[in-house]
Length: 516
Image 1: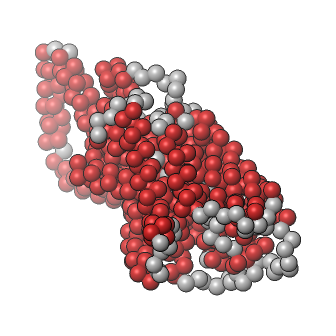
Image 2 (image 1 turned 180 degrees about the vertical axis):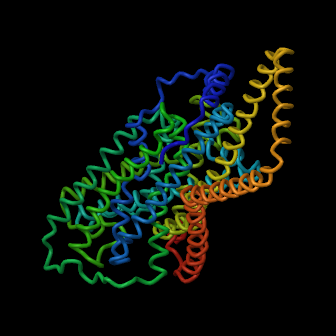
Image 3 (image 1 turned 180 degrees about the horizontal axis):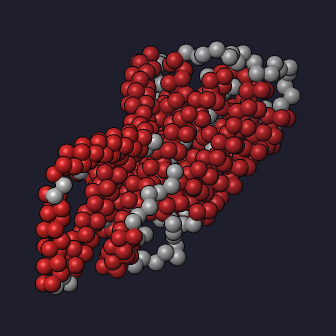
């Protein structure tokens, strides 16, 4: 959907405001800004390898309804990502000074639309989501390294993922010291190459699997899966394709901010293509025997070993970009400089090791994905973006009306100044002559009133019909439907996650194992 166009008067005043406020960007140098290509790479990097190695099992478990569920959730995410990007564009038009809050743009939009309390709520939700989203990265990377050692040695040499978590934490700290996405072009580029290589190598490993006989699409049913399974799949899909916490951070670093929608679309198409091919091959070869991590079911081969290493590398690089918003916000709260300093290193290292500690205590990455995706990301993806967008449209409408009123007032004042006394007398004579003509038409006055009333009613009906049609074709209904879906899905998924935690056996905790 195209952005709303401004009237000529809006454009004129906007250019004037740009001159006053320094172009709305404070005269910042844009040579380091992200192009559409690198913004797309950042989006693909945020998705990472999870949709390739950890999503197929969830889709396969839903049977025939897996693919439609993915397409439905992703379509809604594209829509909410686009409207969230529009919110920032409109906010910059209404208040150019908002660019000063570009380190926490989601919270800035929340405050711009619904006030300080909403901003605090969004900030807390974002911090929890971003921080929690890094824990599955650590767990999967550590478990992959454990799997690699076991497969290479034939099971004779195996280091527990509990120790690998500590090693990964040491490796991540220097990477996390980097700045915002515009300083991570190289990391994003490497990450996308790694994702593509992981997908290709995974396909090769599946094709080379000749272990025993197999039944194509084994045990995959065509019926409707249990509702609980759909909720679990929804939570994992929402988690793996959630880019909203970092979306605006990428947008404010772009050269052309209105192209954020294209970056999201291109990034999702790229990741979905790799994921769907992997899912189809996995379903065809293993069916319902597929594991939560596809790599765990693949046979020993050099392609598998290389894939495990690349997956681990990509998860580390993705964490550097994905946690940027959280790091920047914590640094602002603690008064850290935006430049590279020792204080920044200490803050980011502390957060990394806190994530390692939680991963040591709760090593169930699938459950963590479900909780974060179903409970925390629901409001950020499906509820808040349409809500902010509708409010932003109202503010933009008020802004345009005020502009037109100010311009019409200035024009009328200029016209009044140029009126001469003779013009006023001429207008008065014409008015008197007009009233006189009305008086001379006493016989036809009633018919004229009837015609005028009929015309007014026809015009009123036509206006109402246009308003109804405009409402039907506007974003109001779509936004309302998405919000209702987001509320229902979040409540249902949260309810399921609570019972899933209660019914799950006690987790194997690395800390408890070490105490033994």
